[in-house]
Image 1 (tube, rainbow over the protein chains, first blue to last red):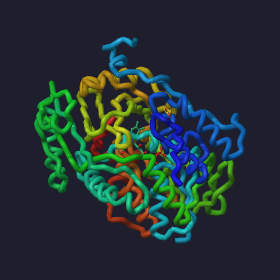
Image 2: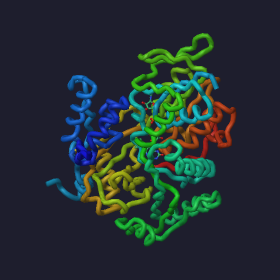
Image 3: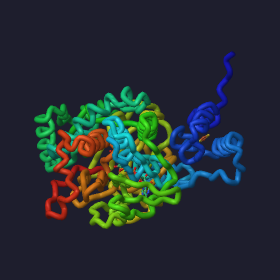
Image 4: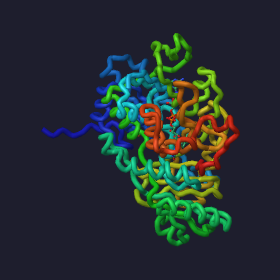
Length: 92
Length: 378
Ligand SMILES: Cc1cc2nc3c(=O)[nH]c(=O)nc-3n(C[C@H](O)[C@H](O)[C@H](O)COP(=O)(O)OP(=O)(O)OC[C@H]3O[C@@H](n4cnc5c(N)ncnc54)[C@H](O)[C@@H]3O)c2cc1C
Ligand code: FES
C-alpha cells in the first residue's frame, strides 16, 4: 500500500513521518525538531507548520498544548530583501 | 579505561570527544548539556571547513581533519552533507595578493592544492560574482562545508550506541571537591568525575571559575544570516572578502540558500540577540560581492559565540590534574573538531597523541606565549 506522505512544512518539504520519527526517538523539543528538520525555517517562518508540529507533539506525548513552547522568534520577523537592508530599495 | 569521565557541554566538541573516548575504550563517559545538544555555537555555525590557514600547525590540523571529514559519514553511519566545494578568498589590493601568495606557497609545501587565480577564473567558478575591484583570488578546491545539525546528530547517535550517557537540560551549576574527587552538580543530580572536561564553548570561563583556575576564553557575539532557497550551484565555494566587511558566504547544500556573515562582533558578552545593524552590514557587503542578492530575502538571522582566546587559537589539554579543556576555537571549531577531539581523547586514554597539541597548550598565555593569530572569518 503506498500512502501519500503528509507534508507538514510546505516551505521546506518536511513530512509528518519525519516529525513522528524524531518524537519516537524522544526528541520532543520544538527547537530541536526545528533544527533537525528545518520546519519553521522557510519563507513563511513557520506560520503554517509550527502549529501543526505543536499539535503532533501534543498528540504523541500527551502533553497539553500550553506546555509545548513556541520557538523563539527573532528579528527579522518577516523575510526582507537584502536590497532593502542595504538601503538601495524601499520596501513596497 | 574505567575512570569516570564527565564532559561539560554537548556541542560538537563535547560529543565528538565523548565519541572518540568511547572508541578508545573509555567505558564511563557522561556528557552534561545545559539545553539540548547543539544549542551553543554548533547549531549557529557558518558551516565552513578549510585548511586555508596561514601557519603550519593549523594547516596540518585541518589537513588531517579534512581526511576525517571525508570518512565521517561512513564512520558514523549518518549523513553529514560534507562537500568539498572550496574556499575562495577575494584579493583586492597588492598587499592582500602578496600575503595570500605567501599563504598559498606555505599551504602547497604541506600538500594543500591551493592556488592564486585570476578574476576571470573566479567568475567562472562563481558566475554571479562582482569582480569590479578584484585583483585575484586564493582558491582551494579541497576546502568545503558540512551540515552541523546532521553531523552533531551523527556523533550523538554513535556515542549513545557505544554507551556514552548524554544528559540534556542538565546545566552544571557547581563543581566541588569531595574525597579527592570532583563532584559536578546539576539540578538533575550529582556526577562524580575522575576526569572532567570543559567543552562549554563560549561559556567555558564559567566552568573554569567553578574549578578555580584562570580562564583565557571569552564569549564574543557573532551573527550570521540565511536566505530563502535558491537554485543550487551558483555560489559553490565559500567566498571570502576581508576588504568588504570580512564577509564570507556560500550556498547551503540542503536548499541552496545563502548562508554567511560579516566581521561585526561584540563582546565579551553573553547576549545572543541578533541586531538590525548586523542585517544592514551583511546586506551592504553581500550585495556588493554578489549584486543579484539584492532581490533575495533574508529568512533567518541569528547570533552565537565565538569562544575567543587572545591569539585566536584554541586551548586543548590538561589545565589542572584531571581537569581538561577543549575550547576557545575562536570561530573555527566546527571545521577542526575531528582532529581536535580525537587528539584530546588520545591524550586522555593513551597518554599521548601525534597531533601537535603543544601549540594549543592552555597554559601558554600564563607563560606569555602567543601564537601567530589564526586566520579568522566573521
Ligand atoms: C555565527 C557563527 C559562525 C561560525 N562559522 C563557523 C564556520 O564557518 N566554520 C567553523 O568551523 N566554525 C564556525 N563557527 C564556530 C563554531 O560554531 C564553534 O567553534 C564550534 O561550534 C564550537 O563547538 P563547541 O562544542 O566548543 O561549543 P558549543 O557548540 O557552544 O557547545 C558548548 C555547549 O556547552 C553548553 N554549556 C554551557 N554551559 C554549560 C553548563 N554550565 N552546563 C552544561 N552545559 C553547558 C552549551 O549549552 C553548549 O551547547 C561559527 C560560530 C558562530 C557563532
Ligand atoms: S511551512 Fe514551514 S516554514 Fe513555511
